[in-house]
Every structure is written in C-alpha cells, then in structure tokens.
Image (tube, rainbow, N blue to C red; front, side, top):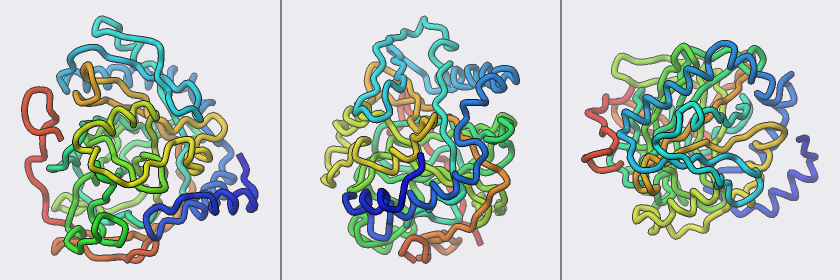
Length: 363
C-alpha cells in the first residue's frame, strides 16, 4: 500500500495525540519508504519453503511444549484473523485439550519489519538479556513465541538478538521519564520492567514471558519489536546496540483487548482507548498480505488464566539503520537520551516463574 504525502498529512491531522514526542505520521512515511526497497513485501511466498524445511512442524512442537510448561488447563480457544479492519477477530472454532496441537498451532500470522520505522520516544538501550520481563508488574500473563525469517530467502534469522518492550497495564513505559508517561517521575528511568532481549535459536525463534500490554492515548494496544543485526552482550547480562536494527509492532484482536481491559490491573487506566480500526499505523502495517496480529490461545477458561501468542516476522538482513534511544540503562541506572524528542502473575499454580535476579546494568 503506497500512501501519498497528502494522505499521510490527512491521517496525521486526524490522529489523536499519542505520547509526547511520538509522531505517527513520520513513522508511517518512513516505513513506507523503507518497504519500497524490499523486493518482497510480505512472507506469503515462504509458506511452502517453511513447511518443506520442517519449520512448521518444529513450531507446532515448540508451542505445544510451551503450553505444557505453562501448565495449561481448561479449554483452548483458537483465534483466527477474520478481517484486519474489524473490531473482533474471534473465531467460531472451538478446540478442547483433546484437539491435536498441529490443528491448533498450524496457523501462523506474519508480517514484515522495516529497518526505517522509528523506534518511538520510549526505546531504551542497554536492556537485560532475559526471557521473563514481568518483574512485579500486575496484569494478564502472556507467553510470546516470536520467529524471525529472512523475507528474501525465507531462512530463519538465527543467533541474532530480538528485543521487545511495551507499556504496563496503565499505559506507562518503564525506563523513561517524560511528561505524558505516567506522572513523569524521574525515578522511572531506573525501571526495567516489560523490556528484554533474547538471542534467536536455529529456527529464528525467541520466547518471552511478559504481560498483555495496556493502552495509551492515540495508539492501539501493541508491543514493540526490534531485531539487532550487530550488538554487544556484556558479561553482566545486558545488551547494547544502536546499529543495524529492524523495528516493528505487533497487535491484538479487539475482542481480546476488551476482555483483558476488564481485568483489575487494567481498569484503573483512564487514558482514552484507541481501537485497532482507529490506528492508521496498524492499517499501514497490515497492507498487502501482512498480518501483524498475534495468533493466540487461552491457557485456561478465561483470559485471567493467561495467554500463549505467536507470530512470525520477515526482515531484510541487508538493510540497516542507526537508532536513537530515548534513554540508556547503565550500571549506575537510567539516563535520559535524545531519541524521539526525549533525551505476573503472583506465584502459585499455573503462574509464570518470576525472575530470580537481575544484573546491574551495562558498564
């Protein structure tokens, strides 16, 4: 989908202000310009290669094992993408624990990340290499199975660092201090929750334990994704890299968001909710055959029991860019940067394991 400068301007004028320093119109234009360099704009051509190379079979086994690890219980309900612009993508299909896992996990949403999408005002460099990023934040548990593929060759992008970050249940990002991000408390620079990095395995996969993100004014509910081509892992367990990154965002069905927003951890969020249908960045990200929505199953009878989500990404490994963090996390704590205009469950049966400790930040 090619958007003219007139359309970009029109959409920007109609867009409700998001976090201060975040300019969705700029991000939209940069993403479109970057994707125009791609010979491939989506992963639809990879389906047969993925199956032939055994990636689909291994994905089914991997996700099944993760469900078992999370002590699944009750019915599993498969949610398929019905229409990218509708508010609800609830599938009429119902599955039980007796349904074969290859039936439940055969679907795989996919989209293409661009190396020129702005990372937004709340990207923090120097995050922890870890799979569990919940810390002590409340909310609905979400296990994510993320796969990175080369959009040109359909090969897995293995042994590269995949980073995610998102806001908490009240729409606040940890690690940055800025007006409009909570109360702007400077001590938030030292917060590390809901941010983390993992190296992809031989299938280009990284699995995170996090929480379902909350919402904030002007953007649909989303999670940020970044793929580092080159980055430095420090001995204390943190990663730093501001070069060669691919950036994107993943989204969730509107009916799922509605269910999650009823959870006690989210009801206190008084910021206006922007729906998927109102977010033009999402509309652009879903152009062509791209599907930036997370496939998911319930781990119990209701969302409070937790979710398992999965999605695949395509990246062009030959295109790179320099990113400008909104903040840096050092051994001594957080420090404001210049990027974007700004410098779990409790323990118990079925809950995700909580982090056992955190390193002290990169030197």
